[in-house]
Image 1 (cartoon, one colour):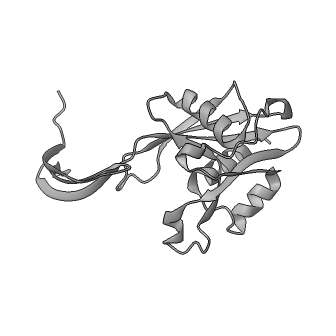
Image 2 (tube, helix red, strand yellow):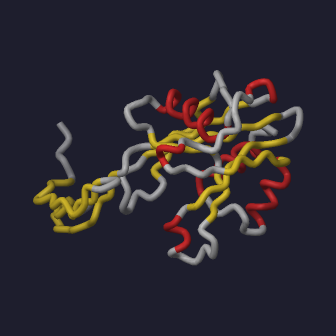
Length: 193
């Protein structure tokens, strides 16, 4: 039986608002067998899912634009971010979640998605795993304008653009969202669009 390399000494709740923020003190077993005491803040906001909607025939992708207030606090002049459609899992499995989020945010009802990876986006402080998906879309899948859920105070602009333009937007700094960049690069490497 493998010995544990982490022993939690204490876990203090700092905030239980939108997510759970804890101050954790723990012992960590080093490679030489000795133990070192460390302390970190750990933020648990749940897991999420993200999808790149693409249309190979048209050479287009669907992205969204919305306010991300933390970016405003760190130099993003208007706080607006261009991103792939994404959302928190809540109690749903990742595939159910991303299908629901796609319909709510973009207005497209998709039935087939492909899971491509699972990623810890900020493992030094956040527990979240994001499940990455791709999905083909077509005009006949459009059932509403999208824009998000009003009760969740979402105000999402839906953007359909040429894939080549999205790649250029990474290069010129218009797209700075890591999950979106990863999906666009995945699409480029795998010749999806």
